[in-house]
Image 1 (tube, each protein chain N blue to C red):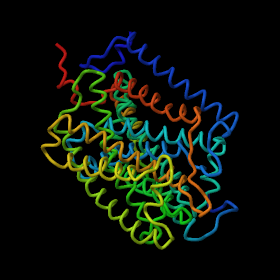
Image 2 (image 1 turned 180 degrees about the horizontal axis):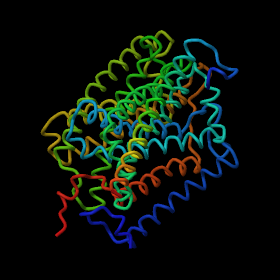
Image 3 (image 1 turned 135 degrees about the vertical axis):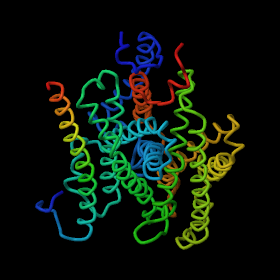
Image 4 (image 1 turned 180 degrees about the vertical axis):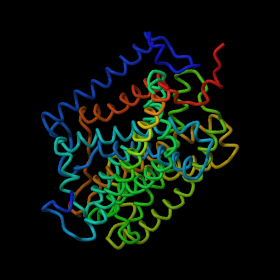
Length: 412
Length: 52
């Protein structure tokens, strides 16, 4: 029925099977939408946020999807600026994942601000002394860049490709894509960094506060670095997941291997910087403020030293070592373990920088503040997952995302 | 925010922040406009060629 919309030379499942899959995902999506509407119409009393937790699950999810969506800017940077041409076989998918991550981030912010109709205030009445203003500017501009990078792919749909204007537009956009990619890399550097900067400048929160250079705390650079390291790992993870679901090989191993190797080196160098940062914070910054490292990892029911070990050793050093070594990348099981650990690692990092920062007591008479999200918060956080799966399903069915798919899966 | 808004102050923070935003939007807008105009001209040329 929809065969005219399916790219030439590739095989897709029947429309009936596809519809059942989409319906199942839509059910999850609707659950999130109901929770979102409750938050918008009844207000933020639908959440379990309180005076201690002005930032909560949504902001963690926001920071995590932005870091995971970093695969789009870094892969684009490697392909268009550095000239790693092999990555043309995965760049489309990286852009799609980026679009999903950034639209999800803005959706979560729209729920979090409580008054989405006033979102434009941040542009018109900008507080030019806030790192969050810079984040808002760069996030929205970068989403525009990502949509521009996505449009040529959309215009390659068999139906749209027949329109001469759209075909020429797609071709012209491809021609100057390096300009958009460079702008995207510039914007990403600043918003990824400023998200880390927001935590690092909180001098009233010793768990997050870091020293730095000029106006930028070290967390500014660490956030950008970790996004560039772990974002491509998320792209690889979703690619492998798509291959599993579709039961097809979609990208050649040499392409994934190259991206994983670069990610491995990025992750390895990042984790060295992170270890230095943690050591300096524990040895110099904290004692100056009257704290010691163990103050932040004891006397509470959840945040033990395990979370630091999990972030730096298990989800940092180990995946970096596997991805850097050629043998590690060749062993399929080890490789996937490293990719999953790297993705979990960056999520743990964002978790501690948002939620452990809020939980840790600052005054001597305070205890730890624990927080459990309400079902509305959980549902709206799962909403982007369902939305992303639906987006990917439609994109995979109707767009030529993977240039190597025909070669790897010839139709008899 | 634009310089004609009542909140505008000619200081470094406003110039850097808002200048950065307009700069990025300017590049993206100019790039997109170039692509659209070129595509419109090319499709119009093709259309005219078809008539000849």
